[in-house]
Image (cartoon, rainbow, N blue to C red; front, side, top):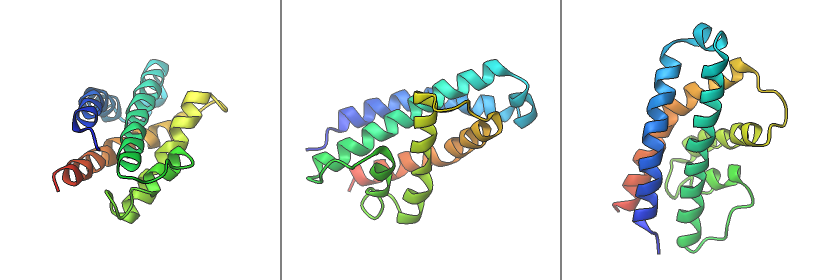
Length: 138
């Protein structure tokens, strides 16, 4: 059974971090590239936002009787056609790779790519949240 309180709590935690990412992004790419503090903040906010989205994905999927996805990327893909539009699910799934690069520090993150990820997150997360709400209210 899907726990709406859990999902609402995750969404409530996403909202202020998303607001902060919007502020950081609004300064523009040049300001972002010149400010290591903004880069570090963006990394942390992105990790938290994406991690909470993944938590929502896994909860919806497993509580809907589906097996746990094999990885974070797949958790978005499997919501396609079920909660998210398939094309959007494929698009937003890329954030799982960004989250892994940030969390596991595979390599130094290119600040320009980080800004691109920030911009995509600010654009895509509201759509993700809207679609999750619509699914819960069916």
